[in-house]
Length: 120
Image 1: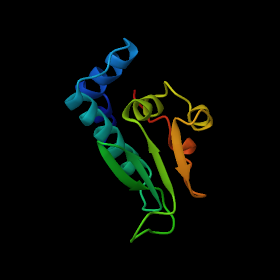
Image 2: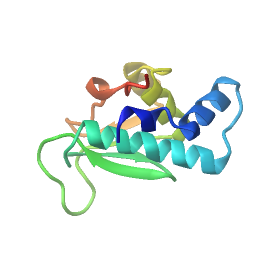
Image 3: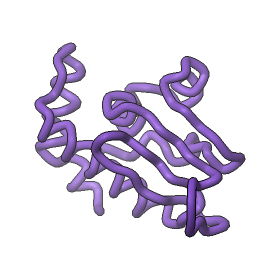
């Protein structure tokens, strides 16, 4: 997915709502999360880390040993709002992990080198 998709109306609407202290409408939040997850998967191809943003989506990304069955050894999980904050640069990876806003497991479960996604 190229950068024009990142600037999509749904991502802008979700970020605007969050910036205004509002909760984005569910369909808007869902599509914004999925759009930005797809961008991460494109920019960090691979299958060694699973990124989960329940209830809206999960992807596998980052080159390395491929996971095929059972619970993946490298998992990153967060809320939709945290994901939008990280992807947009409104929230810093290290702070989010330290504050417990992102749950990580596995030695490869570090997205710091891939975030924020380029939104402009």
